[in-house]
Length: 121
Image 1 (cartoon, helix red, strand yellow):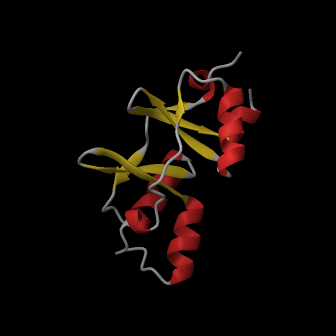
Image 2: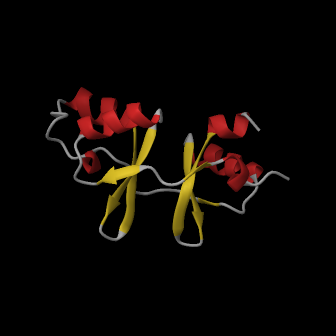
């Protein structure tokens, strides 16, 4: 059985929730990722994808240089435990209709697992 921790991208990559859409796009380019976590003073607040920036932001007329990333981020995150099986992660993704899941160890976000990660196993 393969565990999520074996295939995930470790370390939550993200930005403060008040960073702009432009900041997020540049960070995604720099890190070669399609999703980032958004953080508040109390921890992970949400997740924003490249698609969120385009569909929820730019397509709606948001100014990428002034719009906070949190305005387009998803806040209700479905998570998976690092110790869960990759089969469990795939089941959750299918049920929830998502391509990425934040990975937690207890209450702490420790990474991200994507469909691509699962397909490569």
